[in-house]
Length: 375
Image (tube, rainbow, N blue to C red; front, side, top):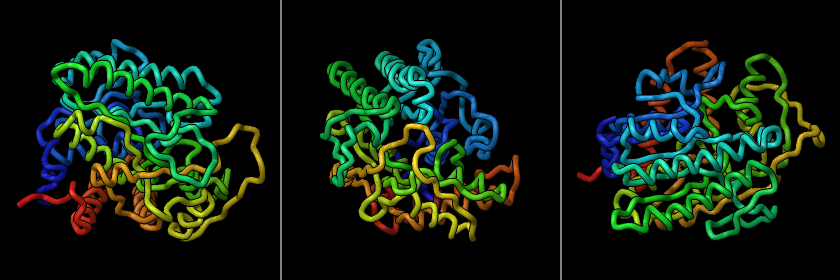
């Protein structure tokens, strides 16, 4: 697409950007998009797990400057910063599975809190840095299971290790922002981003709805639906990533004004129950059977109701979701279908690049600020 590198005000063109967690689902999509924007992309993450990953289908390790490393090791994080000399950092590396946090609560806190502090500490000593966006989760709020959408000034909290670790990471970001990044003469933009549940092609994490659907459908088995009535703020992966990039752009423009916490979630009716979204996906796939779990499977489960308000991001950044839930599901089905037909080892970078281009074009047609290229 012409002038793709000039969206977001062209601020990422030629800029050194470090993405932690680039081997993960959201991290690999973000690293690819930054590459399309003309950034010099560096990555730091654990090696991708065995089996299919979005990172592998992009052959991203051949296309950016990635290094394997564990953010729990301070020296590893500092070495990554020293090598990249980043101007912008997007911190996405995390232990991202709620159910895993019950099996390994210490590892979850070590990664999501200790690892985040290691990144913040390395950022504090990085003379080239101008902006850092730390991605946490909508689970960082003290969830009272109410109908109201959570806002950025609502209390933080968490009744499970995952949620509590994300709330603690938010507190760490706030402390570093006030004590270091905005305290000196050289202001460094420092913000946190809290996103709702994302869907999209290339997610293969366990205990996530669409990957579970694809694994079952590919094997000719029924899809097991856990917590069918749980309500989540679903959105396509490119939606919050557009928000993160907008936030990075604004931090570069005016670090003092935009250094804050921001929610990035869907608007209106795209807050759906798990069963509704599964039915949409199976209809798009062309059929399939579901096995709806009755009651608990013995594992402590996630919260049943969670809504997120993105009004602050909309009014302050100009954030605006572009894909309704059904369209987000169609894009996801398209990606997984192509993967299913292409077979293991296929290079699907053109598929993912194509979806980014389509998303940008949708933004231009809608007139969202970040997608408009000034004449």
